[in-house]
Image (cartoon, rainbow, N blue to C red; front, side):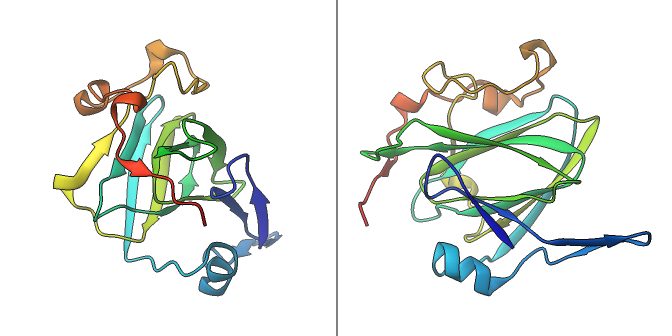
Length: 186
């Protein structure tokens, strides 16, 4: 598995080795020893999957303590732009984001650590998106920030008029009004 570093050191992209021929392909989609080597001890406890149509933007979401979540995400069909935003007050990369195109063809997976908001927008006609989470979903601890917060400067790569968001996501606060995570230097 190839490990791709991003502009935020804690956000990592995994590129599996794909073995293909006229019959199709084979790849290892998950290896605990690779995760442990590059991320430390992470134990995933819940898998989620969503299907969405073009323009659906889900995010930017996070969970508050004690139910914070790290995620390993991938696109099983179609194409999405996946985004992780550093929400850790005091972090050298606070307010910065990583945007990575994840597709059924490139098989990339992005690791979104604790203290980050996460979201994605569908760039293809439809997309099936999968998440591995290291903590259980807890609705009472659910949170979010605005997808269009000007301070974040995220280019979602589709026209604003084509975006389809939930009522909840349209009403999320700005990052500056959501100081829920603190950076702890390692």
